[in-house]
Length: 239
Image 1 (cartoon, helix red, strand yellow):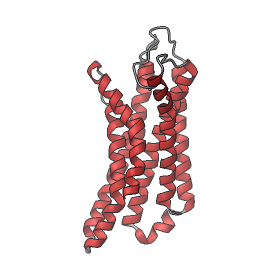
Image 2 (image 1 turned 180 degrees about the horizontal axis):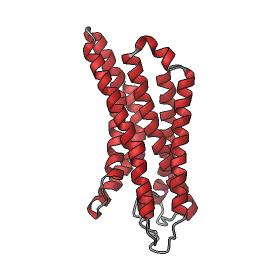
Image 3 (image 1 turned 30 degrees about the vertical axis):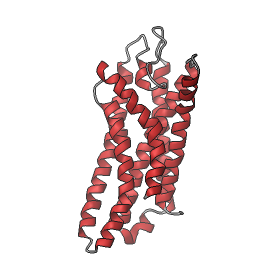
Image 4 (image 1 turned 45 degrees about the vertical axis):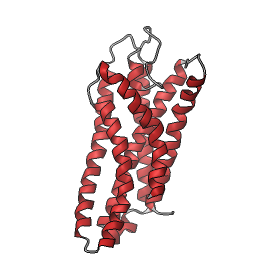
């Protein structure tokens, strides 16, 4: 288990556990109790952790795709390229960038006045739902969300597509059927996780908002924050 793949996978596991722990306990408490309240500071904290962990997961998944690219396209140089220094830098950079982004969102959120309705129309304090409660212009916040989506969703996804295009090309060059099966099995689990995570996130944060989509977004984000962390260990274990 002391390989770059499992080192990055351990970070993904920590993110998934933290992800679920951030929102699920409060969701369960709300299902049991009639008094479904949350104070301002815990709500902002929930938003901050959700955004930080989501952004970090985007970058960790991108790092994992780079790891798979090096393993399949440059197998003889793998231990040199993916040494422990590189893995540590990738992990630290992912966590740092993710939580710096979340801090920017939290600061912008704290500057807004909230004097209108006090009901968050969501299963937890998701940033787009919280912004709807502000009684001031949230244009800056929405621009930052869209820009962050480009850098933390679209850019990593493009890097992954490039990596997997190169991987597919390398796999097709492998002569033996056994070699091809091993290469495909190495990538299949990661592709499943990437498809689930990025597909839902891009629908929620890059597609223009509308009243008809609000209920669908709730279900998508429930899947994103609850079922995705549950499915990831199953996907990798089955592999």
